[in-house]
Length: 456
Ligand code: BES
Ligand code: MN
Ligand code: MN
Image (cartoon, rainbow, N blue to C red; front, top):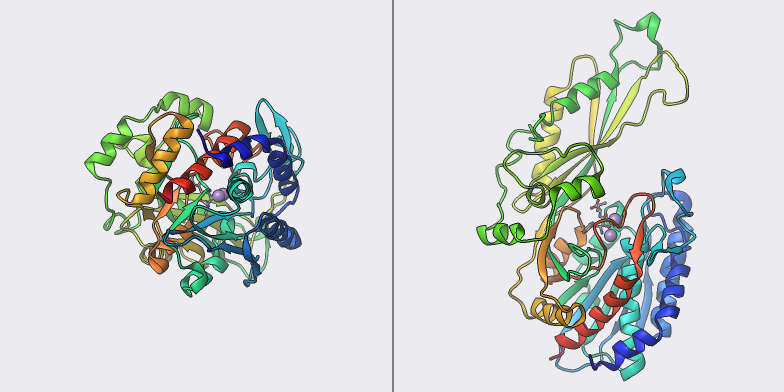
């Protein structure tokens, strides 16, 4: 490999890693109000670094929530413009007692860097910044025009960036987006993600009595909102994982036979997945669909938590006045958040038991997406990945959601190249999140070579 920028990255790797640790020490948890200032600190660290490496027009863009970070470098002539995307916000850390080292004190163990946000997504954001630094330092210029847009609300639905993108600002004029927020299908296997599920995240709030009541005095006569919720939830999905909301599956566009057969050739061992990744005694889901189809190409419905009532130690005999369930659905191509939410909320209201009032709220939503692979950027990506990893790229989908990818396409006409370097067992959103340090290094090299290849 003769790229001087790659050589620069290799020489500076120890520094890159220790800088990443500094970013990881900032607890930028977007969903918790007490970490608002930390989110801004992460944005400021990124904008300072973008300035330092020679990016231009570096700005912090305010939103109603956490700020965006923008930068560009547009001095290349007659070449495409890339929009680099990632997010600096992270998920909460609970359950804290299961972490082997504190989530915001990054620690190296067995070739991995452990910290909340290590791979989702600060490590991958930093890989983008370090790829740009290597190119600028070694060449004094970039091979193509580059815009950078980092957000701090991805994990909470991305409202700020969605509004900004929908306003189609001239700052976002580009030819394609480079999204580093996904994973390799298996260690050492270069991977491009070409499809994501969409989602609707909702809350059902049920109210019964006007206040909490003694369950002995009133039990039998007063409605119990938790029982009502349990009855509703039990009617949303059957034992086979089939969602019972009328019309929910009507508009689904199934994967093509070619895509399905490519998935059958991926190195996937269901039993290994069950034991090492899920760790349950059995997998569940819709009959007639493989695990990859169930998680990539079928909608699902999950309950995340049911706040309310008595959850302290010991016993309290109470009929709570209100109960809440946090429920989300993942959507696949063909489905829209608007229609899915309408079908869901009208069904929930219809099956509500007697004696309770109920409100169904949409917290946030995002469209599913499917990227066409017949564009020059995907081809450049496979050339670059082949050079760095020595293997042919596999094309996969992911069951997760990155709402802005659909918006990039709809509002800006940008196809996304989703080139990410996580691993399936990186514990994202869970205790002991990690980033394989070799993947961080090869990720930077892949991004450098990709940008160089798109200039050819
Ligand atoms: N990076 C993930 C999405 C992802 C996970 C892509 C695994 C590919 C493989 C992203 O940060 C994420 O967690 N998204 C949320 C989005 C939601 C809050 C709108 C998700 O999928 O739950
Ligand atoms: Mn992410
Ligand atoms: Mn995430």
